[in-house]
Amino acid sequence: NFCADEKLGVDPPFFPAPVPQEDQTDLVQIVTSGPDYPRPSIMLSYFSAINDAKKSIYLTSPYFIPNESIFNAIKAAAFSGKDVRLLLPSRSDSAFVDAASRFYIQELLECGVKIYLYQKGFIHAKTIAIDDTISIVGTANMDLRSFELNFEINAMVYSKRVNKELTDVFLKDIEGSKMISLEEWSKRSKVQKFVDALARILAPLL
Image (cartoon, rainbow, N blue to C red; front, top):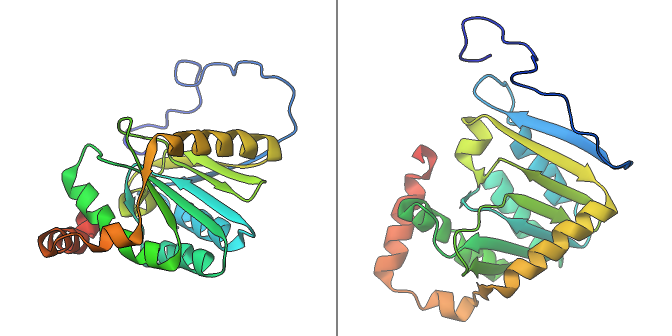
């Protein structure tokens, strides 16, 4: 509809009849964003969910370039003693994005965030499991493009059943990952740190 000259509507060729699902009573809230949407709704939903966490935050993202609000919310959660874990790809499909993502790692480690780099390929899941009740799954990365520019859609699921499934997958994925230690990360060369900082400056353009 954003690109077409006429309103496309909800027609069977684009939206076939839904497949019947097993009977469940889980509550789902759909959150969208895009260049035609006036508010950064997906970013705000992430921010609210992270701030509302009571015990744990398990976050998976293939691209991690958070804005200041999300970055501070994650640090505050870790500072307050919550179990905050972040799963990122060891290497994505963009070396430049990887460098920008690495810029945030040391400060998060210093705050107590546990960070894992996935070793079995390019992990492309975009999920968050909050405590044992809230799950977020969708198309949005944890980056500025998904917050402001791209057409994205997330489902916020309020369900202990779904949260447990998502948490189990997260814990399985970190078995195939390398956990980063602050001591190890601090030993990176000045050249590596400079490249990461330079990429971070250009991050709003990514």
